Length: 199
Image 1 (tube, rainbow, N blue to C red):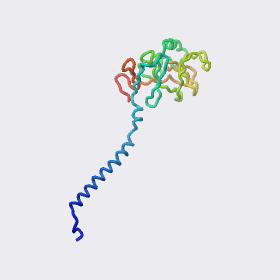
Image 2: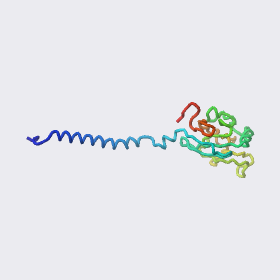
Image 3: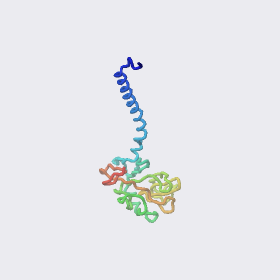
Image 4: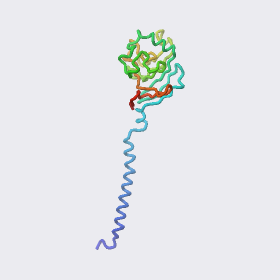
Protein backbone atom coordinates (compact mmCIF):
# COMPACT_ATOMS: atom_id res chain seq x y z
CA UNK A 1 0.00 0.00 0.00
CA UNK A 2 1.20 3.50 -0.78
CA UNK A 3 0.28 5.00 2.66
CA UNK A 4 2.44 2.50 4.53
CA UNK A 5 5.16 4.18 6.56
CA UNK A 6 3.53 7.66 6.39
CA UNK A 7 3.15 9.37 9.73
CA UNK A 8 -0.14 11.29 9.47
CA UNK A 9 0.59 13.32 12.61
CA UNK A 10 3.82 14.68 11.02
CA UNK A 11 1.96 15.41 7.78
CA UNK A 12 -0.70 17.35 9.70
CA UNK A 13 1.97 19.27 11.65
CA UNK A 14 3.84 20.21 8.44
CA UNK A 15 0.60 21.30 6.75
CA UNK A 16 -0.33 23.47 9.75
CA UNK A 17 3.17 24.94 9.96
CA UNK A 18 3.20 25.81 6.25
CA UNK A 19 -0.25 27.39 6.57
CA UNK A 20 0.95 29.58 9.46
CA UNK A 21 4.15 30.56 7.62
CA UNK A 22 2.10 31.38 4.50
CA UNK A 23 -0.34 33.53 6.49
CA UNK A 24 2.50 35.43 8.17
CA UNK A 25 4.24 35.93 4.82
CA UNK A 26 1.02 37.22 3.27
CA UNK A 27 0.68 39.64 6.19
CA UNK A 28 4.22 40.92 5.65
CA UNK A 29 3.47 41.50 1.98
CA UNK A 30 0.05 43.06 2.61
CA UNK A 31 1.15 45.62 5.23
CA UNK A 32 3.48 47.63 2.93
CA UNK A 33 1.01 47.32 0.07
CA UNK A 34 -1.85 48.70 2.17
CA UNK A 35 0.41 51.32 3.78
CA UNK A 36 1.38 52.78 0.41
CA UNK A 37 -2.32 53.33 -0.33
CA UNK A 38 -2.63 55.64 2.72
CA UNK A 39 -1.98 59.37 2.29
CA UNK A 40 1.55 60.38 3.22
CA UNK A 41 2.27 62.15 6.50
CA UNK A 42 3.09 65.25 4.45
CA UNK A 43 -0.24 65.04 2.61
CA UNK A 44 -2.17 64.56 5.86
CA UNK A 45 -0.33 67.49 7.46
CA UNK A 46 -0.97 69.73 4.45
CA UNK A 47 -4.62 70.16 5.40
CA UNK A 48 -4.07 70.37 9.13
CA UNK A 49 -4.26 73.66 11.01
CA UNK A 50 -0.90 75.35 11.59
CA UNK A 51 0.12 76.96 14.90
CA UNK A 52 2.18 80.12 14.52
CA UNK A 53 4.05 81.93 17.29
CA UNK A 54 3.88 85.64 16.49
CA UNK A 55 5.69 86.83 19.62
CA UNK A 56 8.94 87.55 17.79
CA UNK A 57 7.51 89.36 14.75
CA UNK A 58 8.80 92.93 14.70
CA UNK A 59 6.52 95.79 13.58
CA UNK A 60 6.66 95.93 9.78
CA UNK A 61 7.91 92.33 9.50
CA UNK A 62 6.24 89.66 7.35
CA UNK A 63 6.59 85.92 8.00
CA UNK A 64 5.41 83.07 5.80
CA UNK A 65 3.95 79.69 6.72
CA UNK A 66 2.42 76.92 4.59
CA UNK A 67 -1.18 75.78 5.01
CA UNK A 68 -2.95 73.37 2.63
CA UNK A 69 -0.15 73.81 0.14
CA UNK A 70 -0.59 77.59 0.04
CA UNK A 71 1.70 80.33 1.33
CA UNK A 72 0.13 82.24 4.21
CA UNK A 73 1.49 85.64 5.18
CA UNK A 74 1.44 87.04 8.70
CA UNK A 75 2.31 90.73 8.82
CA UNK A 76 2.81 92.91 11.86
CA UNK A 77 1.52 96.30 10.70
CA UNK A 78 2.97 99.50 12.11
CA UNK A 79 0.77 102.36 13.40
CA UNK A 80 1.87 104.35 10.32
CA UNK A 81 0.72 101.57 7.99
CA UNK A 82 -2.65 101.38 9.76
CA UNK A 83 -3.07 105.15 9.40
CA UNK A 84 -2.25 104.96 5.67
CA UNK A 85 -4.87 102.24 5.08
CA UNK A 86 -7.63 104.70 6.02
CA UNK A 87 -6.63 107.04 3.18
CA UNK A 88 -6.77 104.54 0.29
CA UNK A 89 -10.50 103.76 -0.10
CA UNK A 90 -10.98 105.87 -3.23
CA UNK A 91 -8.20 103.95 -5.02
CA UNK A 92 -9.46 100.45 -4.17
CA UNK A 93 -11.88 98.16 -5.97
CA UNK A 94 -13.48 96.71 -2.80
CA UNK A 95 -12.35 98.77 0.20
CA UNK A 96 -14.85 97.21 2.65
CA UNK A 97 -14.21 93.66 1.39
CA UNK A 98 -17.80 92.97 0.42
CA UNK A 99 -16.91 90.81 -2.61
CA UNK A 100 -13.83 89.06 -1.30
CA UNK A 101 -13.15 85.70 0.33
CA UNK A 102 -12.66 86.02 4.07
CA UNK A 103 -14.28 84.92 7.32
CA UNK A 104 -16.95 87.29 8.65
CA UNK A 105 -14.64 88.57 11.39
CA UNK A 106 -12.28 89.87 8.67
CA UNK A 107 -14.93 91.63 6.61
CA UNK A 108 -13.73 95.10 7.58
CA UNK A 109 -11.37 97.76 6.27
CA UNK A 110 -8.38 96.24 8.09
CA UNK A 111 -9.40 92.65 7.17
CA UNK A 112 -8.18 91.26 10.48
CA UNK A 113 -9.18 90.26 13.99
CA UNK A 114 -6.54 92.50 15.59
CA UNK A 115 -5.61 95.69 13.71
CA UNK A 116 -1.85 95.21 13.89
CA UNK A 117 -1.74 91.56 12.73
CA UNK A 118 -2.71 90.82 9.12
CA UNK A 119 -3.10 87.19 7.95
CA UNK A 120 -3.67 86.40 4.25
CA UNK A 121 -3.15 83.72 1.63
CA UNK A 122 -0.16 84.93 -0.39
CA UNK A 123 -1.57 84.23 -3.85
CA UNK A 124 -2.75 86.83 -6.34
CA UNK A 125 -6.45 86.51 -7.12
CA UNK A 126 -5.75 86.97 -10.84
CA UNK A 127 -3.79 83.86 -11.83
CA UNK A 128 -2.34 82.62 -8.55
CA UNK A 129 1.16 84.10 -8.68
CA UNK A 130 2.73 85.01 -5.35
CA UNK A 131 3.01 88.80 -4.94
CA UNK A 132 6.09 90.35 -3.37
CA UNK A 133 5.99 92.30 -0.12
CA UNK A 134 6.85 95.92 -0.89
CA UNK A 135 6.49 97.97 2.31
CA UNK A 136 8.41 101.02 1.08
CA UNK A 137 6.56 104.23 0.16
CA UNK A 138 6.73 105.56 -3.44
CA UNK A 139 9.63 103.47 -4.79
CA UNK A 140 10.98 104.47 -8.21
CA UNK A 141 9.56 101.43 -10.00
CA UNK A 142 6.00 101.76 -8.59
CA UNK A 143 5.59 105.53 -8.40
CA UNK A 144 4.20 108.15 -6.04
CA UNK A 145 0.82 106.48 -5.46
CA UNK A 146 2.39 103.38 -3.92
CA UNK A 147 1.88 103.47 -0.13
CA UNK A 148 3.33 100.05 0.64
CA UNK A 149 1.69 96.69 0.09
CA UNK A 150 1.94 93.63 -2.11
CA UNK A 151 2.90 93.82 -5.78
CA UNK A 152 2.32 90.93 -8.18
CA UNK A 153 5.14 90.99 -10.75
CA UNK A 154 3.36 88.52 -13.07
CA UNK A 155 0.72 90.98 -14.35
CA UNK A 156 1.15 94.08 -12.22
CA UNK A 157 -1.66 93.78 -9.65
CA UNK A 158 -1.43 95.98 -6.56
CA UNK A 159 -2.72 95.17 -3.06
CA UNK A 160 -2.46 97.39 0.01
CA UNK A 161 -1.27 96.24 3.44
CA UNK A 162 -4.76 94.85 4.13
CA UNK A 163 -4.64 92.78 0.94
CA UNK A 164 -7.22 95.03 -0.76
CA UNK A 165 -6.88 95.25 -4.53
CA UNK A 166 -6.42 98.56 -6.31
CA UNK A 167 -8.68 99.66 -9.15
CA UNK A 168 -7.50 99.16 -12.73
CA UNK A 169 -5.33 96.07 -12.18
CA UNK A 170 -5.95 92.50 -13.44
CA UNK A 171 -6.71 90.95 -10.01
CA UNK A 172 -10.52 90.89 -9.58
CA UNK A 173 -10.77 90.63 -5.78
CA UNK A 174 -8.88 91.26 -2.57
CA UNK A 175 -6.44 88.66 -1.29
CA UNK A 176 -8.06 85.68 0.42
CA UNK A 177 -8.09 85.63 4.21
CA UNK A 178 -7.82 82.09 5.59
CA UNK A 179 -9.72 80.97 8.67
CA UNK A 180 -7.63 81.64 11.76
CA UNK A 181 -7.98 82.27 15.47
CA UNK A 182 -5.94 83.36 18.45
CA UNK A 183 -5.10 80.80 21.14
CA UNK A 184 -3.23 83.43 23.14
CA UNK A 185 -2.12 86.98 22.35
CA UNK A 186 1.01 85.60 20.70
CA UNK A 187 -0.14 82.26 19.25
CA UNK A 188 -2.54 81.82 16.35
CA UNK A 189 -3.89 78.80 14.51
CA UNK A 190 -4.26 79.13 10.75
CA UNK A 191 -6.98 76.81 9.49
CA UNK A 192 -9.43 77.07 12.38
CA UNK A 193 -11.92 79.63 13.53
CA UNK A 194 -13.31 79.91 17.05
CA UNK A 195 -15.37 76.86 17.89
CA UNK A 196 -14.78 74.99 14.66
CA UNK A 197 -12.11 72.77 13.17
CA UNK A 198 -11.55 72.96 9.44
CA UNK A 199 -8.81 70.37 8.95
